Image (cartoon, one colour):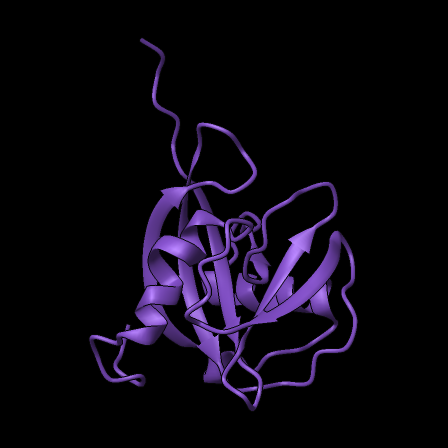
Length: 142
């Protein structure tokens, strides 16, 4: 029996448009859509990771004071077979998003009720259901 590896820790950001849809992104060479975000750099706080990754992937600078902690979930990793991802997920008020940058190949706005097969397990199993059935006030402290 092989050793169980540590989960991949990431920050992710839920961005909505005026119609209430959420932004998903697909990285180059992958098939699953996920939220913008990524892995922290050494010594980086998780909110800083969310802001940095959103700039790199979308060219959008988020206000760290307006990031609201939605939750932290662990699910199967979307693009690394046999691995788990532990994601700290934030919401942020709507911002203008134009074109994908860096390793992002595609953007797609989806309804939070979407459960398409090409969504990352984190979205399908955890975050999208949480967006539809909030269990705490949106501005409750993390």
